[in-house]
Image: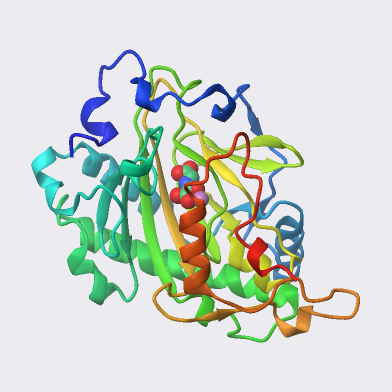
Length: 340
Ligand code: OGA
Ligand code: NI
């Protein structure tokens, strides 16, 4: 518990040396928010939305949505809840603390395996599986007292929005209804908490990565999220109560390379703590689920880009690669072993 950034960083006026990144892995020049990342209004005309989403997924692999059906009140309530959660006294969080993320509900710090890291990340994360709610909610935190009830409601609403967005993408790709059922079955949340950092230019919240799953929905309160496109980092505007939707590796493979998955990272700031509430849909990593490019998207002019692979094997490779440290942005792709 003493390792959680939130437990020791308050009032600290320099960055401890095991959080100082070597110069080539630092954020570099401060990148301002960019307004090129598509913003999609889910109350627009359906065929327009489908077109806009496919274009965004082809060019960026990320977009933001508004009028998505999850109420402002619920989203603000979630931010307030997590603010309280991360400020609870240590003894209230001890039961779920772990040095690395486990299968169930876990509160951990930094990257995926603190003990193996040469440098740590300025981040604490609470993560847990979400669906079916009745099966998983008994493992969720019971403080603040309203946690299970409020998060249960959020899970239902975000799930509705998520499946609606998946169906719009499905339609835009010309695929059959229900084709993503198996690969979107697993619904999990990670809540990242980045306390203020005395020198954001030398430390990092979360290093550049692509999400391993199918699709991710992120709610954030302050600036910090950046995406890598055309050789440079671009800041994602923290639009109040919008969701940032980004595609993970599985969408790139299933769409036969038609849709991008986007590399992204999280920077810090020195004045406020930043929280992101992240929902992941993906295949169940415990089952030997086979992922492959959709047959409809493989043609003579678009030959099959990836061979079929098992998701659980992909995840094992992905996690192993997470410890390969490279200078600068992520240079390889976790899909390389499956490329044809
Ligand atoms: C993630 C992630 C970014 C953020 O949890 O996969 O990319 O802004 N988070 O917290
Ligand atoms: Ni991510």
